[in-house]
Image (tube, rainbow, N blue to C red; front, top):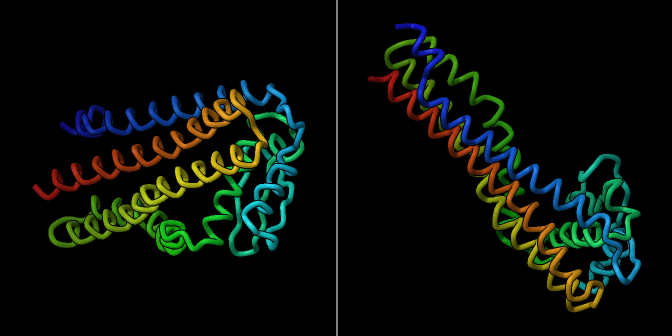
Length: 234
């Protein structure tokens, strides 16, 4: 009876579903970005130039645009007010690069405008990091002990893991809103035209779906932990 519990636990299917969802989303993102990274924009602007123009059009002059190594490691750091663009974005003149650069500018605009979900997500970062760090040790200890101690540790571990899941969920409106802001500015300023806007939207949609997949995977993992904890308590 020990082998089926450890090796044929039906809750593993939840983990498998999460992994598959994330792999599909990641593959779609890479394929979409690679496709439109080969399409040069009519304006000939680089990702850096596009980012600077988007920031200026939003009246933001205190955010620096810098290069960061890596592939699609683009991000906005609100603490130092630096927008960092990756190798595939910074000097590229592609539609994909301009779309990604504008998206990161969307986060800078959110920060400048005091966008509530972004502020909430930023406040959650230390809590979520702490929760994800202690969650599994607590859960594993919960399965090693028995009785009330086991239930207490498992519930504490589930609560800690829930904080990390909450961060994933809160990230979704932040990312979608940043993309919406990016598309609006790109269209209003004429940096992209017609089919280019459609291509950039496809890139940003594919990127957003990776966050959706990550949140779905985290929720499935949380559900699995809850099911295992309930089984243990029974």
